[in-house]
Image 1: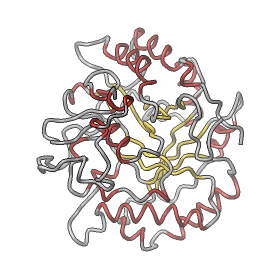
Image 2: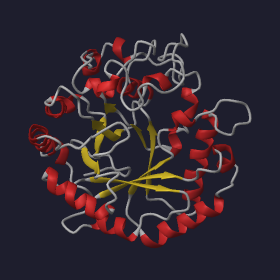
Image 3: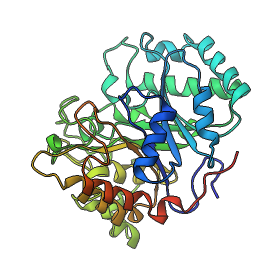
Image 4: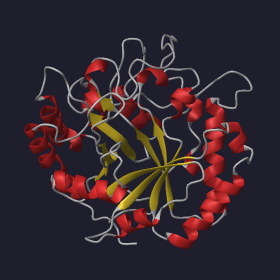
Length: 356
C-alpha cells in the first residue's frame, strides 16, 4: 500500500525521466526507456513551464497505463519573467487558477508536484531583487496554497533541492524551505560526475564561495536537534552515509570548501526526520578512462539502497545529452546489465503503484 501522500509502505518507488533532450515525446521516450531497462517505471518525471497546462492528455495516458498505473512527477517552473516575490504577491494568480481548473476537470488521481526545482542557483540576496531565499519560500507557499484553495487536493508536493554542498552552506540556505504544511516530500537532484570527484553532485564548480565558516548542522531551523552522527540510536551510529564511496558518494557528497556540511541525505534525516526523501533526478556521467564506472556504481546502489530507508523514491535522469555529458544507463553493455539488476530488485517494486 501507499500512504495518502504516496509514501510506499515497503521498499521505494522506481522512476525515470526518460530520454531527456532527445526530442522524443514523453510517451515514446518512456516506451523506449522501459524497453531498454526491462521494466515499467513507477514514477515518470515530466517538465512544464510558464502557462502550460498539465497533466497533458499524453501524460494522463502515461499515468493510466495500459499495463498498470504510473505516478507522474510534474516539475513546474511557473514563470521565467516574474520574480518569486511577484508570484508570491499574486502576479500569476490567473495562471494558477486556470491550471487548478484544468487539473480538477481532467485528472483526479494523485501526482507529485515540485515547484521551481533546484532554486539555489537562482537566489539573489540583494535587497529588492525579488529572488531571495525567503522570496522563494513565499512563492512556493503561495502557489501550493492557491492550488489547494482552488480545489486541487491531489497534488503531493515536493521541495526539490539541488543537492550541492557549496550552496547548502550559504547563509540563506535555510530560508528556502517553505514549511511543513505545504511540503509533503523533500528531494535532491544529485549526479555522479567525474569532473566533480571529491566535490559535489549536481552543480560542481558553481555557486557562491562556501567559505562561510558556518556549521551546517547549527545554521538551520531545528538547530536544537542532535546531529545524527552523534546520537546513541544504533541505527544512527551505523549510518552508511559516513562513508565517501558507493551510494553515499552520491547522496552524501561533501566538499573541502563546504566546511561543516554533513551531506544532503544526512542533513535531510536530521532536518526532516518525518518526511520521505526522493531522488527526483539522479544520474551517472560517463567517465573517460573508466568504462566500467557506471556498472560498478549501479551495482553499489543495488547493494546499499536498503541502508537508506528514508529514501522512498529513486528517479533516474536518462539522457545522452545532459548538460555535462551522457547519463544513459545502457551506454555500455556492462552498465546495462548492472542497471537491469538494480531496477528489477524486489525492493524497487515491493509496493504496487496505487490504482486511482
